[in-house]
Structure formats: C-alpha cells, structure tokens
Length: 295
Image (cartoon, rainbow, N blue to C red):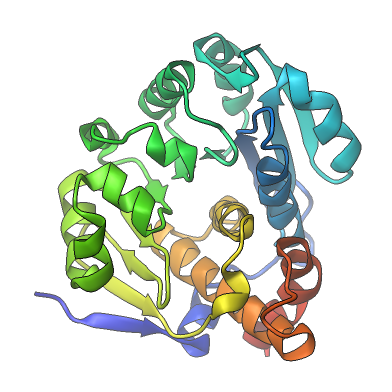
C-alpha cells in the first residue's frame, strides 16, 4: 500500500500555479458555479467570492431565478444569472441553460447550497454525465449521489473532485459514520478514490486527499476556526479556481486544502478561532496564506 504524504508549505508552494505577468482574465480560466436555493443564498456566494479572491479570471454563478436578485446584489466581481427552478430549488429544467453556459467554461463547481430534492438529484446526474470539463462536487451535489456512487464511474478519465465532510462521505459511501470517524480515514479515502476514479477530499481535522492511483496526502495545518457553516463552500471555490488556472487535480486539491487551512490559522492568530468568519477567511486570510507560498 502506498505511503501517505504530508502537505506542508513547501509542497503546497510547488503546486501553486504561477501567474503570467502578461496574462489577462481569459488566461486564468472560466469557472461556472451552480447551486443555491431558497434559504441557502450564502453558499454559492461564498464559493464565487473564494474563486475570485484566489485568482480565477471569470466566475459565473448559476442560481434559481427566485434568489437571483439576492445574488446579483451581493456579487460585484462574479456574474450571477438566473436558472429555472421548482419549489425554490434547481431542477431538471435548469439543465439546458447550465449546459449552454458550461460549454464556454473550463471547470464546473456543483452543489453549494443546492438543496435536496428529486429535481436537484436529476440535475446533478445529467451534468456529471454531460460535463467533459473538470467538476468539483460539494455539499448537496454529493448528497445527490447518496447510495448511488456508481454514477461517478461514468466519469472515469475525466477530472472529478469530491469534497465531503465525514457525514456526507458516510451517506455517499454507505459506510457507518462511526467507522469513518474512528477508523483509518486514509485507507477508506484511498479505497473510494480508486474504486470510483475520483479525487476525494475527505474534510475534517487533518483533511485527507486521495487520488485514483492510490496516492494519499494529509494536510498538516488547520483548526477549529474553519468549523462553521460556509467554510466548505470557500474550499470548493478555491479548488475550482486553482483548476481553472491550470493546476492538476492533485495539485488543486492539495494546494487548495493547505491554503484554506493556513488562512484559517493565520486569521485565528489575529481574531481567535471563535471569531473567524468564512467571508473574513477569503478577504483577510487568503492574502497572507498565498503570500507565504510565493516567498
């Protein structure tokens, strides 16, 4: 069995895509984020903000029509657009417009604030089958596959990054939560990634990144500053942004996990772990965390 590699600052620095001084917004990729629902307007916004603040060139945000005006007011650097919805959630009727927009993008981030419904599940299934682009699947995008992870096998050979916390991984894999929490998280993540041909980012204390070829990485930083709603959406936007900028799936996942956690650590030194918010993580934590990797 392959050894486990620790993600430290040196490794993360080597994985961070460097920016061309003569680059323009098209150089740094086009990201499409799809999510949001009534009562969940913060998640897609945070993912979009994280992508913008981590260097992505253009960020589009597809949300239900019923919350589009909210997102349009909040988002000044990303571009929200309305999608057909059903009962306040995206649904199969959203598929055509998403597919059209995705045709001009490099990466799809699917799931932040999506909500759980049959329509959302169908949309996730259709988009996973359709997208030739790299996909970052998070939150209710993952829950849409609960009990049916076999849908991921159709994407073998295409980049798919999943970012579940332990409860989401339990629903996805069918494994008891206690086994995931108390067991060998590295071995469980490695087995899942190999079987389903995906990159698995198993979040938690010392987040695990497992690749389809058996490689496993464990993050070395991060703490309870990240233990609040919205932090996962920030990570989704960050990983998707790094993919847009040309990082491999391995590098985007590992570097994204490190930067996210390190930003939380640095901000905790100023604000304590009690007071760090996801928005502050993006606006105040990202700059010094990225700066450390560029020294």
